[in-house]
Amino acid sequence: MKKDIRFVASPPAVVAGMLSLARVGPDDLVYDLGCGDGRLVIAAAELGARGIGVDIDPVLVRRSRENAVAAGQEERTEFRTGNFFEADLSGATVVALYLLHSVNAKLLPKLLRELRPGTRLVSHSFDMGHWPADRRITVEDKWIFLWNL
Ligand SMILES: C[S@@+](CC[C@H](N)C(=O)[O-])C[C@H]1O[C@@H](n2cnc3c(N)ncnc32)[C@H](O)[C@@H]1O
Image (cartoon, rainbow, N blue to C red):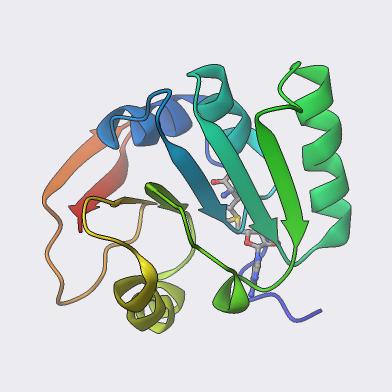
């Protein structure tokens, strides 16, 4: 298992800000690429969306599933062990990232190839280099960026 970035959790207020900026609601299928402990996927489910978390670390995937059960959100959530560079993103209406500039840059071609028009992309702290965000906000001094595909 070679991680492109280690696990650092988004604070709850930042998770809420990401979901709000992406206008997540019951019609959405939200992916978190590198889902950590599952908190963003679970919070999306609490808004009525369905969520899929992908993480390369099987211990974190197990923890995400346990957290979803504890939150009563196991029906609306799914957690997959895998590399986000190889993840099937079909059906996504929202994609969330908390990675690094370098990893965002490597993921961008896949996102542009696979995400359908109308999908919202949100990123905590890191922008997409030369692709300007449509909106950006700060929550607890952290930048959150939004792109509308
Ligand atoms: C900074 S954490 C973000 C966690 C969560 N998205 C959040 O905002 O709280 C990045 C996560 O990406 C995972 N990760 C790193 N490289 C990966 C890869 N190539 N494929 C899938 N997950 C990866 C790490 O295990 C870690 O949980």
